[in-house]
Length: 102
Image (cartoon, rainbow, N blue to C red):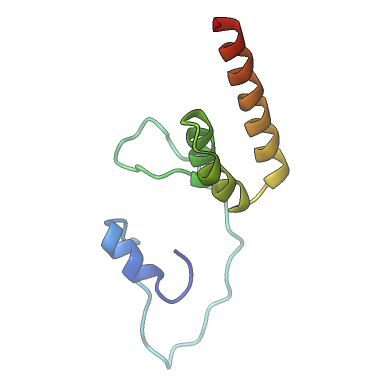
């Protein structure tokens, strides 16, 4: 959802930005401010956004035993090593649980 199609994609998903980008070519470009971390209240249903959706989707895919989908989510986003360690730990715990139940 980044790039020139971002506003259109956000509009389709119902997550429009508060300030629409101006289309005036004659205005001077403002310097971009450093991106500040936004505190997201996860309990607020009005937000409905995840800070790192690929992390949550990776965990979901591992728990649902969808290995190819988990591999895809692992490749996306940042911190691939951390995500791989989490997935490995989940797979080991699932394996131990399965062998213990037999």
